[in-house]
Image 1 (spheres, rainbow, N blue to C red):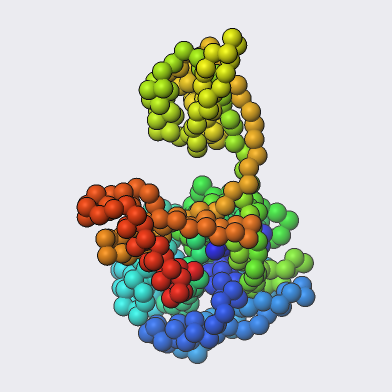
Image 2: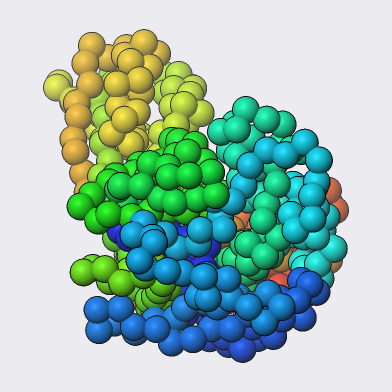
Amino acid sequence: MRLHLECSMGAAGDMLTAALLDLLPDKQAFLDKMNSLGLPGVAVESVVAEKCGVSGLHINVYVNGKNEFIEDFDPEKDESGRHHEHEHEHGPVHSRGHGHYCYSDICGLIASLDLPEKVRADALAVYRLIGDAEAEVHKEKIEQIHFHEVGSLDAVADVVGCCLLMDMLSPDSITASPVHVGSGFVRCSHGVLPVPAPATALLLRGIPIYGGGIKGELCTPTGAALLKHFVGRFGEMDTMTVSKIGYGMGTKDFEIANCVRAFWGEDAEKTDDITEISCNLDDMTPEAVGAVTELLFKRGALDVYAVPIYMKKNRPATLLSCLCRPGDRDELSRLILLHTSTFGVRFSSLSRRVLDCRFYTVDTKYGKIRVKSASGWGIVKEKPEYEDLLSAAKAHDVPFSEIYRSAVAAIENLKKSGAGD
């Protein structure tokens, strides 16, 4: 399954968490897990929220019964449009004082939580990104960066919640749109800073971003760090068949719905473009043609085949054809010209309809065998990998057909158990 995050109104930790939670069938299971982790004094709830007539979810985090943002927000004093001011109350200190967590405190807290190992590793990696960015901004070592106590626990809940939801959903791939960062200025404990705030700007290096007419901070450091850690590619949404859409609502109201949208679905049935390179050969031995075929496969050809033909004066010859991706055309053409007797090659641009392929492994009494599974266009095909079958047949000195039957039986058993879905 694929996940695409639309960040046309930026991203914050609570918005990303709410958008992912909106995709989850059993939302209460997530909330129960969050509230049993052992975060000191923290309670997490989700509420239905509406922006511009669209309903979604909003995440509230209470620390010792207090939601800092809701109770402290004063629209007369702050026109930044920020999501969480506490996310900017980071800075260098040379001794830890009361009411603050340092970076090692946060890491120790996350390490102590009752979390799957992958979720814990993801959360620590996200905080490392935030800590490195804050340290670079303040020209201090990461150990000297501190976090406001209540704000830290709120942000930890956002980070851990988002990482936990990523694990519960387990998308095969994650993409996101370019990130809208907003414009203007944001108020923080150090004063008034330009949008995007310095730490956010550092976290967004290498990620496509843009500003706009909306005054305020749309992307927070926590949101930027989560995107940087999880998203594999930023850009326009690839063609996909969407089965569900999650809405994660921000706090402030704008003329545009203030939300992150999470699209959940599958790759659409695949089509792509390939190139065919071909030439006629009437003066090469079969062994020489075979050598060229092997070379082209090693250099990235999708397929290579030879067809017997008759040329002028009824001379028997061979039509050599190579299918490749368009970007490999020039290199494979050069190899054909170099390693065959032809004086020229022909090109054809082709479109093809293909199935989406993946591999999984089944256990047999002869060992593990990989299975190639292809699906799309209403079709599903599966078959054991030839190389694995051959290796097992040699290793156990049994007929190839016996290994094949054992692998097919293992595939059928896996389907019956539902584990291969």
